[in-house]
Length: 275
Image (tube, rainbow, N blue to C red; front, side):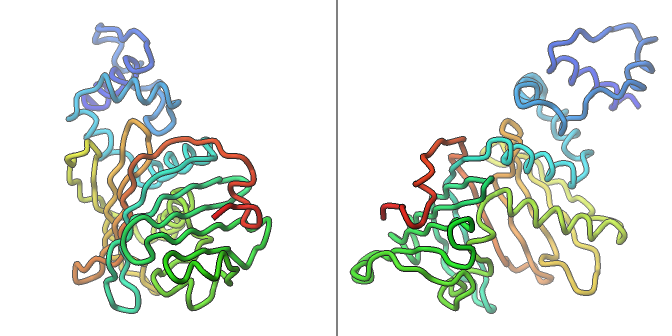
């Protein structure tokens, strides 16, 4: 109860309200159940984070259900709608851990569209554009080097080439889509007791990290352990990693330079995109 009251006072501070010091007011504050961290507006959340000691923020994160944190992140990116970020990606495909790739990602959540510019690693120089409103089953790609002679070509989303270096198709690109997939897992895990949290604390970038352990299930979950690091100022996960039963890395996505962006409609149109 005491910890809960401290949190309510911190939330009130973050919202610019005056917290009463009168102990008799504490039960009333607790009954009011001030707005939860995950429901705060962007400005209120940032104010709260800046005004709150790290140990208190860590306690809030540890006590907030995973589903609410994921829902908060998805609400934020969908609200921004058009955004960009740099992604460091690595996946284990058909049992083989492939080299890391660095990709500049440009997303429009509604109507959904994506552009991918491969910066480093396998496929460096490749550019991809996909908009299901233009062609639902095909994306446009231009390779670098000698392959660029062919120009920008259309490929099927589910083709062997599209799946050669990833377990996922371009339909699944974007932080919002990743969070939606994780949210589906949390719903599936509820009857099984949910995902127990193993708190890890703050990383060197100021993101709060924790690992969620998957309960036994048939069919099994994608990961035995999911590690998520959240930037509390943006409210969006900046690292998502999935591990297997033996602790082996299966997939990782590290995001940086996340920011809202504005682009003309032709930027996301594969037929009009200039590669």
